[in-house]
Image 1 (cartoon, rainbow, N blue to C red):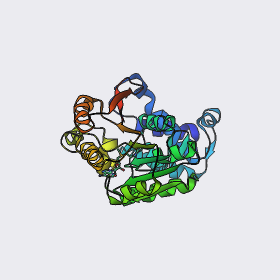
Image 2 (image 1 turned 90 degrees about the vertical axis):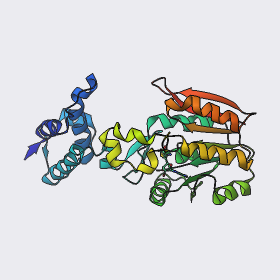
Image 3 (image 1 turned 60 degrees about the vertical axis):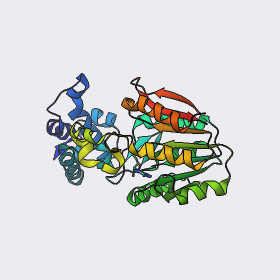
Length: 290
Ligand SMILES: C[S@@+](CC[C@H](N)C(=O)[O-])C[C@H]1O[C@@H](n2cnc3c(N)ncnc32)[C@H](O)[C@@H]1O
């Protein structure tokens, strides 16, 4: 029999990264081992600390060991647990979708503040942004689009689990005919567009953490040689389509602010622009106000 304490100590050594970049990394192996074990035995971490001698049922220990093996190979915790917290809710995630990041919660907040009557989430992935917005404002119609069918399967599953029937998921390449006709039929007075499209330059592949590059979908991460190709195509489509919108909120790479501002100015000469910083004080959201 293995106790919780024994299981955690053994796993902590196995998971602990060799490279210590900051102080927090020192206890990372143990922290992650505790999270995984707590998840397996369906308790919280405080239970593990209070019950170090609890003897783990063989089946739980086996499952925990499988999880530790996966983590040793750098698989992200969210994929192992098949869940990620986002804006106070748990979303199902696996390799078919990007793991929603805390920075993207800003898109939810900003969209809600605009009191929209229609929201369009472009590149919805797991559906975290669109579903969170739909759950906060009722009644509201939300359109969520993505080119990836596997991602849309997960997004629909999340909408069902979280009871968000007012989100319509469509397979669509940026502003294509399907998305356009959905919006036109609703005749929105305040259309708010939120988009966390792929924005990393292709060359970043060499520098990113193994957790990210080895596991997260390439089509969700990389936005071409400069990183801006997908966003650029999207903004060009919007400006040429004469689609009326109240706001566009784009999640961006802080390195792109200058280029993006120049681009947006040329495409939307009458619009106003604003940058919102994330908690690390880096440019993160680019707002276009028509
Ligand atoms: C960075 S991920 C964001 C996922 C999700 N919105 C989030 O924040 O967790 C980018 C998403 O955009 C989708 N995507 C990439 N190119 C697209 C395109 N041309 N049209 C629509 N979606 C696209 C990808 O499949 C992926 O799901």
